[in-house]
Length: 273
Image (cartoon, rainbow, N blue to C red; front, top):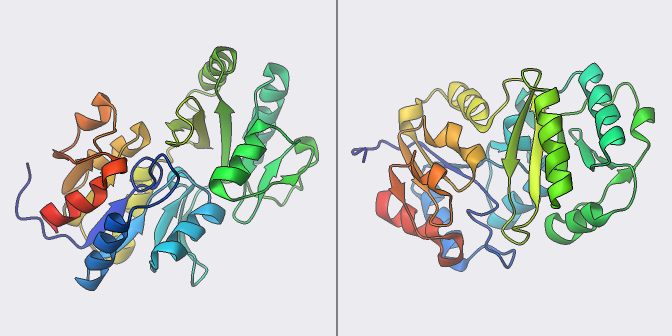
């Protein structure tokens, strides 16, 4: 375990890390994050969520400053409307992705800075409303305005057939798009497969943020539970995996805390900060 951490930045995932299965953040985690702020350590959420739903969590926790959204495709201070890092998907790859999902029958969501787009009502749009608190604008993706810059797509799959189609999508776009998977504790059977510009990851977002702040990765403590957190956990000064994380995630961590249902974030903060 790394010692003598001069922590300047705490990076925290949301779903499966702060959010428990019931879809809430514990009082213990809230108090611990507030204590970190009072000590002068920056707190940055780093999530696959779009800014539309991530902003609600930031406001709920009373956080300020920069945060990372869209699985690393954007670093922004939503209160000030300042964006310091953004990576969008090329129009040609968006169009090719849409063509692929139309052929395969799986559901693709598209996100721009301020927009969430779906082609029709489905179990996915219901899930987005109920759990993430966002509603889509409905549009035929073939008619998406040319000036609408897409930051992230998400394949939302749960059946074996849908997951097999998502694997075909991954193989088809290998080397041209980045695909990563995230989960929401309230829906353990659902895979959220994030579709991003090549080279985008939570690590690329953290790199952009520490460069902007003028601090080193060694001065960062990160807490996460998902495979999409691995690039960050494997690079920072202190990496904490949640107790509910997979063995693959725990393997790159310096410390494994309690699970999200037992305020693992607070336990790690109390131990190290």
